[in-house]
Image (cartoon, rainbow over all chains, first blue to last red; front, side, top):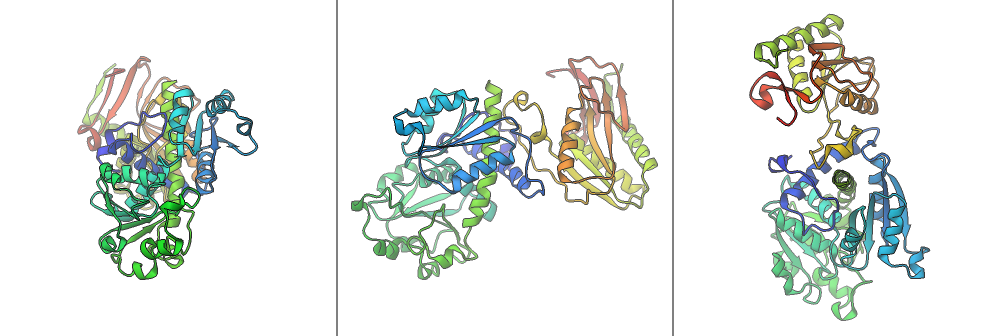
Length: 317
Length: 178
């Protein structure tokens, strides 16, 4: 527990982005997640905090980790979980997002976890429903719980975030993970370096407080953390991307490049991985990889988020 | 009714609790002392220290955070920090003294009992409180009591202050909102 967060109180009914959170609020979530990590180590990994509450996973895009992680987090808080997916729903009959959400809400739902291809989808729902809204990824805008779990994992590894040098590598322009990480890391005092080809890492990102570098090798030996992003083939326009082989050669975390990293470098990846493209298998599965730790911590972070937004939502009812 | 009990009084209440516990449990057998965060934890630490002075050699110590087990999520309002529960002790088959500063409605103790139950099955659970005040909403009664206050008005709070957190040892009865 950090001293600063002792007097902070959580008052947000929604989690929409890391951009809107203060450094103290981010630390508050991370500290709360510590408690939920303890819950996950008990023999009975379940607490009654959200008994009688209902959480809906409303996913308008595919997901494995995030969706199951939110479901399990809700179960461990004793909430009931409903799964909604676009396929096979009335969305295919032309129902609007707001109408869909209002209908879900009319069933007595407390929290809607939404993933949607349109940036701002979560904000839209927060304006038009009474539920707590948790953004699980809106287009290329933000993925705040991924940002939080990355921060949590880095803090757990190094004991701090301030002063660390973190490289986020790959397809930045299409990445909501990169944006959430950028906001969170800079607010907590880390130095963020965005790495990739100019087509995928525009200089405009420097306005958000990051350093933009197009030569991975230039910074490889100086960073404490390397966060390798997935090459999002489904989002990338062909003009943005050279070829897979060329990408790997210049921006992949290969074994050869890994040998030039700092000795204690911490390797992260939000998943799903393209093994052999942005990251070599041996490194992903190696001792300096935090990739599965990220998944484990994601559960604790999502428990914390669901608990906090529900508590704040209850207080405002 | 006095509305202030000072350092000497608090010392007397604590001794009274220790006397009761020492009379029931043998000093050479395992005994777990588990406090409810925040001030129950401090009272538990004092009790454990004193029991140790009296020759109790197998004391286990634990801390419960009952926030996630409360039944009034919608009433506690935004955000007091939830903190970890620490129970790295052999709970099963050993006696357990559950410790809190003030017993009022009984809802905290109910929550603590549920939490303990998720961790194991103590042989017996006894309840020790520094102050037992009126206002019970559940059928829960203490086994060891430092001070009994029978006619505190409903809109008054009984606050225990301890040196470790508040800089002074005292029990005060004051109107709510103070």
